[in-house]
Length: 362
Ligand code: NAD
Ligand code: DAU
Image 1: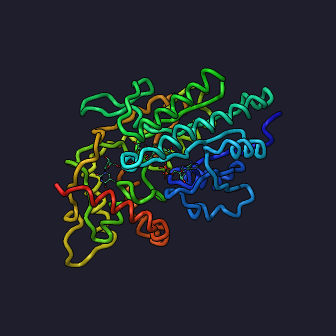
Image 2: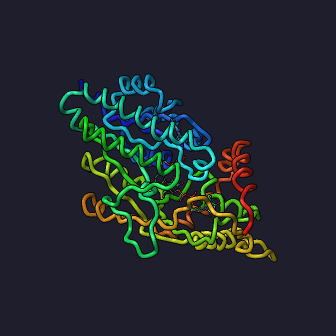
Image 3: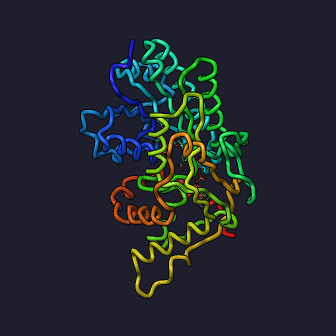
């Protein structure tokens, strides 16, 4: 049996990157799309309000670890591809409560791969050749870099350091094994830090924008010199679309912004943008809110991505500069206070209280 149409099954499409991906695909007049999302604290169906009534869009609230549900969705919608974003994604939460990371990232991905394999095996030859399982992963699986080390490439050995990174590494290995053992056409992407609209405000950039706006302390872990390679989320979505259409099964592609920045530089840049966009006559500059706090245990020092393979093979490179992307992001959070209020629920406040109350000021 073949895939019946051009449908794509997206998992985790109500989260930060997933919503941006769903919106970009739907707004470009793309295929029918089924979004399977459990709506954990990080998922928000309201992100997708603008496409909710589009006949090409179907939302299903459910767990990727529910084999029966996944099998029935595959049987019903007969997608030509699965794009797998669903995960527990916050390193600090994986330090406080790692179990959910193993459950969703390892076991959930296993269930999805297994059900995909059963579905794929029953497709006709054309359907099997065209099918793709795109596994969205992270650069954190490679561990940490010294200041002069070369950036992570697709051949860098795995050395995950947090429970989050280890669970993503486990899922990458399963994805790889399903290609090598069963021939399932899996492609994996390993991307650096994303930023942009709809990011849940427990991650560094949105947290600092909102705290700066509200005159609250801006918590910087350790000495603030940890380095991340920042990529605007729309560039990540464009890369995933390139990989979906032209990536080679069994391959992995590193995706990065070529924008390494120390955390303290990111935080001061946000302070200056908020000062500019929301000036407060006579008030101290927001930089004065910066507060160094106790470091994250096992905090990776530096990430950097060598994205030459995806550029060479698929012609992708980031379109946005960090400074312009950050400006757009700050503006988005300032203009979307309704969205911000809707995601900062009681559970959010509890997390913020737990994570920062226990961090002594340095
Ligand atoms: P997110 O935490 O914002 O969203 C995760 C989504 O998955 C949420 O909508 C949540 O409800 C859903 N989800 C969680 N558990 C689920 C389950 N068991 N079944 C179904 N849905 C479930 O995450 P994000 O930042 O958008 O990241 C998306 C993917 O990209 C993740 O796999 C992450 O590892 C990867 N990634 C993220 C970044 C980044 O900087 N944010 C960078 C590289 C890779
Ligand atoms: O590298 C890709 C990864 O980037 C993704 O796989 C993860 O899903 C995503 O959450 C992100 O992980 P980080 O741990 O790098 O992101 P986070 O925004 O939590 O932190 C960015 C940096 O800022 C990191 O060095 C820790 C630091 N930090 C973070 C917070 C929340 C602070 O200094 N203060 C803070 O309050």
